[in-house]
Amino acid sequence: MLQEVFEMRKLTFFSIALIFAACVFAGCGGDDDDDDNITGPGGSGDGLGGYATMKTGSWAKHNMTSPPGATDIYKWMGEDNWEGKQCYIMEFEMFMPGEGTTITQMWLDKATYEAVLYLVKMDGKVMRMPLGQTPDVPGDETYTGPDVERVGEDKYTTPTNKTVNVVIYRQNTTIGAHEYWTSNEVPFGSVKDLLNGQIQSQLYDFASSGAVRGISKEEAMNAEEMTFPGIPGGGDIPGGGDIPGGGDIPGGGDIPGGGGVGEVVITVGAGARPTITVSQPIQYLILIAGFMPVWSFDSPDLGQAGGLSFAGPFQYGVLPNGANSDLPNPPDMVAGESYMIQVTGVNDAGISLSGFYTFTR
Image (cartoon, rainbow, N blue to C red; front, side):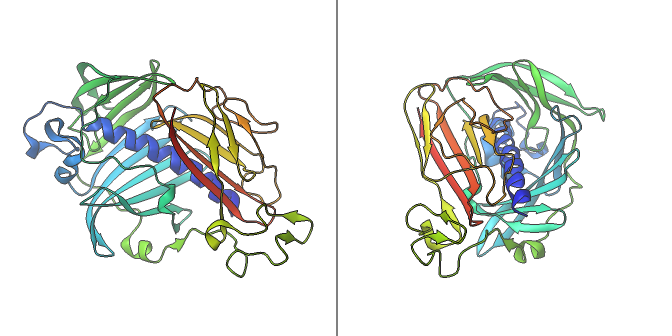
């Protein structure tokens, strides 16, 4: 079960980060002044305030380049009330060949755009994820930046023969030149995403109605809280932290927060290739620049108690011995760029470890 949880966290984190990046750029695209005819957010370039113009049941399906056959469906499910807050609901349905479909559902406070509920559904099971695991949600604003350039307009025709007008933006990032094709005629705005000239994803089909909610409100209300094995007594281990079999938990056995999930404190040194230190051994690390993952590594025993873990310190870009990586060769960190690090692990006692750290170099 823990293995599945860790893989799910990786999958949903990548997916949501990319989707939010698309939403931000969607607010910039399009010149249509007739907001009543717009199904995507950001009518007339007004930013994500266009959420209010989206029609319940709107959806957009994208084909991903890697891995071949992977797809994403973004769905706008309208409004509902959660614990006294009126919320927008969006769903992201990701299909990965050989792994099946994962549904992520986000409830955003209508007044603040803050996430108030984060659900994941895999193999028919719905789990309520910690809000601390979600990336920041864009607010009611148009994306701007000194490194973003509007480079032109074009038309795009989907494989299902629907043609939309697009505005093209280019942004220089730490991993290369990103090009975003956006359209206010498309729910969520995203049409095509290219990195260094290579297509990462592109729109397959879309409509302003017909999306079916993958996680019902009843399922949301009955969802199990995502927890990990805890230790009776609120986190203290009798005997100062000694675990039968010779395992010790640093810090005398106290688990930060007094529960079953341990915190990992992360510190980062200076420079373009800084040293990253962690207070407890980890099995997985991902580093995000802006919205894009640039470096990651994980243990072949990911999610397994007693499996291979890495104590650090880590040199940015240098893989620990025995680690796997989807992103083994990151670019130098750039002065003034914002970064986020997420780490996870599980120790010999079966206790989940997690940590987040955001910084600007």
